[in-house]
Image (cartoon, rainbow, N blue to C red; front, side, top):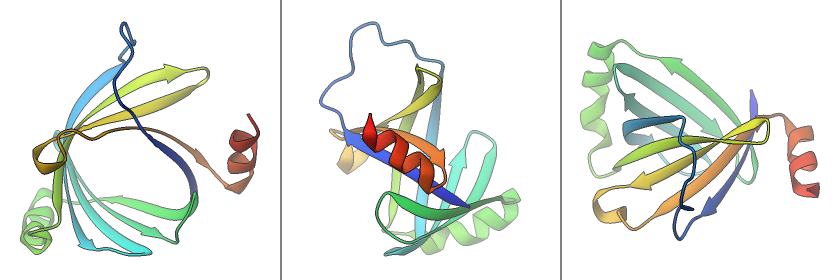
Length: 127
């Protein structure tokens, strides 16, 4: 399914920002480039995600993995891993995701919003 993702670097979070959820995420990449294959552990959920294309509109498919399958694949991501805390906050009728990276990327903070389909990209770029 096509996904529209807009991502921004954030210097600091506004005081009093309402936070709906907070999750710890570990992710590692099996393949990188225009076609990416990513493993992600988020609480007790294990996922494999394939992203294809580049730019703001890309195809993305995310599939749950059994923990055992995840553990077999995880060593193959050595050297291509990151950890972050993901916060969610309401923005109008949408939800924004704020990622606070850890480790070597610890000073990096991003905010993103996703929507399905290319028509959403045109609508969000007009605002």
